[in-house]
Length: 150
Image (cartoon, rainbow, N blue to C red; front, side, top):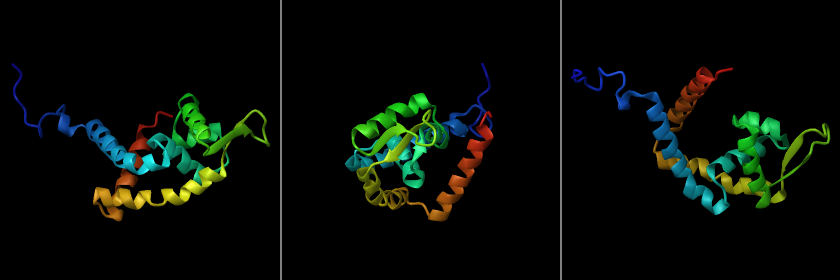
């Protein structure tokens, strides 16, 4: 029988795994967004698409995929659904006909005003100070960079 180790001694203790903490934190935070996004008709992945477009539209599908760190096959259904509900349009890029350009509609651009309420609601729900969340964001960005295989 293997000797019993305490959580502090066991390198395989579930509670010590970064992947476990990240997974639970991700699911928990996305769950906070769900009721805030429902009145807007958005899922969390669709909200991320809209955030990118509110900041930088128009974007090619390729640029959007790169910003969101998604492959185009995953992004395409999100974009199609957002187009179907009238938040964006897809069309050929005027500068390069080979590229698919994604632009906001008036309805999609106007939705930004409603979305401005989301960050403060999330901060309030988390009950954390802004500087603590900024430090967390910086740490997670370092993790993302360190884990990037390219």
